[in-house]
Length: 137
View 1 (cartoon, helix red, strand yellow):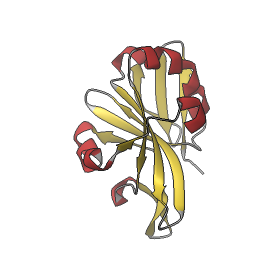
View 2 (view 1 turned 30 degrees about the horizontal axis):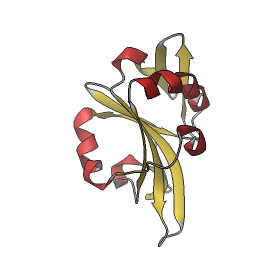
View 3 (view 1 turned 90 degrees about the vertical axis):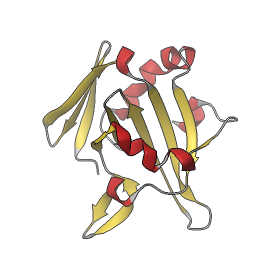
C-alpha cells in the first residue's frame, strides 16, 4: 500500500508523503506524463506507475496511490498538448522501488526525484503507440 496521496484542486496537484506536503505544481508546469507499464514477460512481473515530469523534479506515483485515479481529469488537455506517453519498461531502477523487508520489490515507491533521475530509464522506455490512455489507466 502506498504511503502517500495525490490531491487535485482545480489546476493544482499536490503530492503528500506520510501526510506531509512534499511538492505541488500547476498543470501548466507539467512537461510530460508517462504511464509506465513495468514488467517483463520473461520474469512474469508487471505493474503500472505514473511519472510526472516537471522542470526540476519528477514524481514517481504507483497506481495504487490514493488519488491517482483523479489524474484522469487532465487526460484530454494533456492529449491535446501531446504530453502523455504510454510506454513499457522492463524494470525500474532499484532506488525507485518499494522495499520489501530489506530487498527492493518490483513496485514503484511513491517519491519525488531530481529531474536528472529520468536519465536512468530514458533509453529503456519503449512507447506503445497502439494503446489508448484509457486502456492503460
